Length: 346
Image 1 (spheres, rainbow, N blue to C red):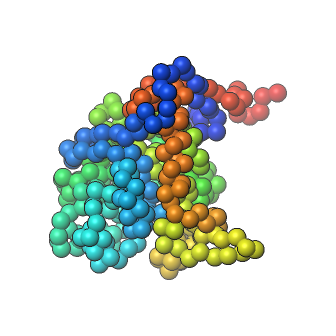
Image 2: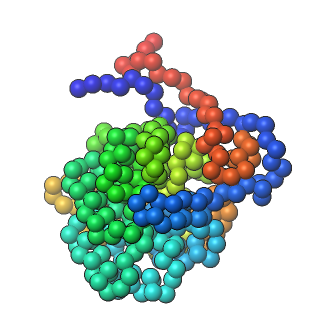
Image 3: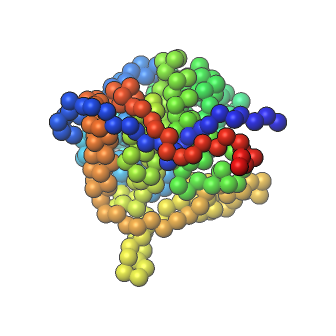
């Protein structure tokens, strides 16, 4: 057993310090990014925000809404769509807007191979597991890189620099960073495992950028200011779940209680998700997610305006004309009292 006493930070622990700026309006800020991915060689241009591959968020309807928005946002489709439905969507829509999601179960891999055999291989793939630290996961990522040499691969989740480096060496273009920070994730409560999200982003971005790779901050953002902090900490992409839940694009039933409308939202390791997609929770594991009711929010376009407007405003406060410059212009201020002794200093 060992203890690391260095302070680690979450979004709530800091604010971004304002600086003098020559920007006169939010409209002068460019919040798009341009990337050339390390392994696939493919290019990306757009707002680097990704809808999470969760029921109610990573949906076909969300992808269509993002396409209509025109800012270049993308959606990681949840992995429980039927093969025929995925094929139909890819045929009829711009595949640049979506990430094909896959886990490590045999059925997911077989469905992907059927998808490839029936037509064009997906250009973007998201390999998503709760624990990105297993050797089996690293080997799986390498095998997917061999299977899809021209695809842009995003994979995770991890929270430490050494594992980011390992995944990039194994063929990952974008490493997903975050264990336990999501609003409907209970991994930290159930396992005691996790890492404060802002520090994870800062440390993992440093490791990835040194190797020509990228990171996606996954989880923990509850307001637009958190997204700005993630980008300020060095994240290249930010993945959103709860902030994009509850909309018309959720493909979930809207219920009404006491005159108010709600939409169900749940973690993909929750009882609800496992009963829906796998028939129940396996006897060897426990649920690591929860189910909540979120207020019905109408069309996602309204939330997107708030999110993108908040990021632009953050850039104006620190003088960043482009989102790319935000991390260079960011100084974080600690706003919580430092704990000098984890056992309780007086």
